[in-house]
Image (cartoon, rainbow, N blue to C red; front, top):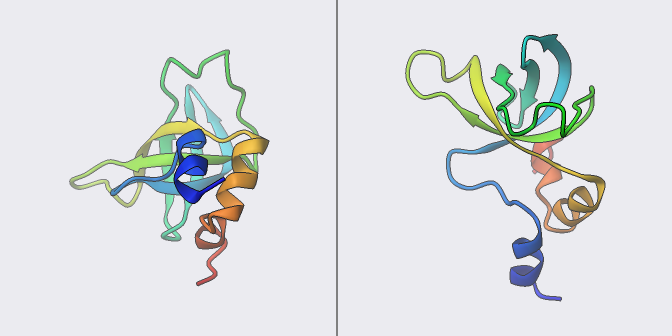
Length: 102
């Protein structure tokens, strides 16, 4: 399987999107996420994830930071990665960016 075929089966971060790890659930459809740029953002959970995808500490997510005055503190949750997707991200070397490795 080529990298192109693998990337079609898993959601790859696009320009402006960041990988992050959930560090705390805040309630009221919000979670605290440590992003790959070492910023901690409070992210909104959109309605499409409510009661369908349950988040817990340590989950890897895709975040779109807000642009403007709060881009370093706020964001929107775009995708919640499943275990199989994490294995593919690891193969493509995306998770090393989250862990702070080069």
